[in-house]
Image (cartoon, rainbow, N blue to C red):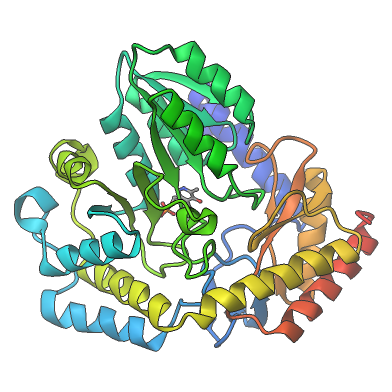
Length: 402
Ligand SMILES: *Cc1c(COP(=O)(O)O)cnc(C)c1O
């Protein structure tokens, strides 16, 4: 079967995407999928033989490569091996899984927690296990793709409200009516814009209308709250969320996802969510690394404080240089460029100067709002951040964004 000669919808779809990618490559504007060959300490990495400052990392507290976390992973391999005996429900459960889930529950101040092999899968399986036909699921329009996919997969009536618009949410809750079960879902920190959900009214509305509240804390754990515990700590509203979802692949330098909440909810998910029952358990090294990371965060509280200071320096500095950083309040800092081409050109100019940033373009963000999506971490030093901002400033001027 020669793909070039086929003109069915599947072949056309493949050709259209590959054509777009080839064009961007040809213009020397393609910066996705670049492999890192080595960690170089701090926030520095080796890419294609060049040492670069990493400004696109999700390792917000700088924990990738932390010696104690690496040691925990190695020890777990010696004790348990590299895989498990299958799914959690059958022979795949290990003591390290139980210890990790207890650690997460304690850190998130809930009764219990359950883990899955990725954050993406966690959202798919948890949303579609909690709601189904006849129920309503109500989601912020800028929620992560994994939430959207979970909502679609659930078969529940899927209502979306304008981003962070609490009046729009109230309309949706009224639309769903008082009879049906309702689940409201929002990101705590939005992954493309770095802004924070308007949490107090969100919680109040869920209570008023008897809706369940699920919050995705992928970008808020380690970031929001005095000790990095997330959005409840940030707003001083302990116990406000029914279903606290998070990932083990960002601030926590491992892979996997979790949900923390009341023990009845977790017990239900362990016996009803398909990703738990039909997909293999987290590998022991990753479970042990994740558990050690939660401990390191608590033993090294300076990391959360340093991240906050670094984010402030980065946001203010970019604004002072004339950039539009949208509504970010966190370590995710969009640098608005406008067109896809401008975002690609900015990326190229910055990467040529060894500042590793990446572009986000449509359809991940609305057309015309393409951007660099830069991040800072606790691993950056103040002078590295200044330097990166100078490089981005120069890039902005040369590309015509400023
Ligand atoms: C990254 C992310 C996920 C998915 O987590 P993975 O562990 O990478 O699969 C889910 N939700 C949000 C908001 C994210 O940013």
